Length: 32
Image 1 (cartoon, rainbow, N blue to C red):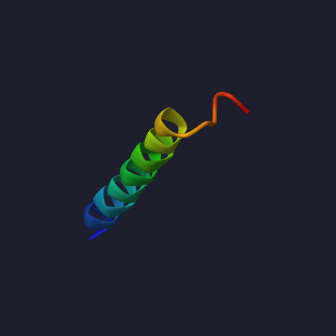
Image 2: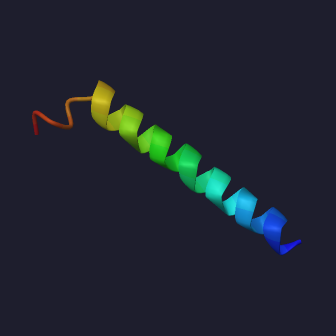
């Protein structure tokens, strides 16, 4: 059960990091 939640949390963190990274890459974040 603990392994399941650990995998789930790491999965969520990974997807969030991907979204943030894509946002920084494809928006005008760096210009600001």
